[in-house]
Length: 108
Image (cartoon, rainbow, N blue to C red; front, side, top):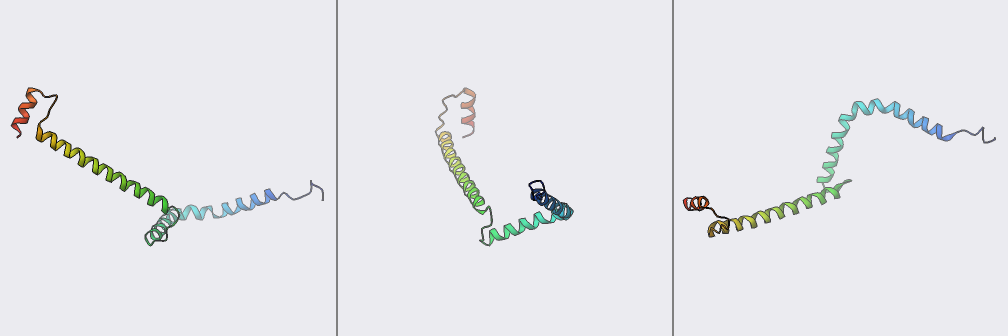
């Protein structure tokens, strides 16, 4: 056979793959709303039972980062709250005005 008469395998493979996709696309479209929740339930079940499915490491990493951030915010709020209490108790108001002084004395 000459090079002009050899079968074109690429076109055959593309045709077969395209035919399979066309054949099963209605099934995928019809059952798509069922597949996604089923996969999600399967993934969560595996994660909770300790099997660590794909992406579990990223979920753990994000969870740890969220916990760190919440702890930092909590510590900062506690620190600022203590500073505010100390400021309020000492009544150190460098930008004080007569009306503010009156308000502070009234609210003792």
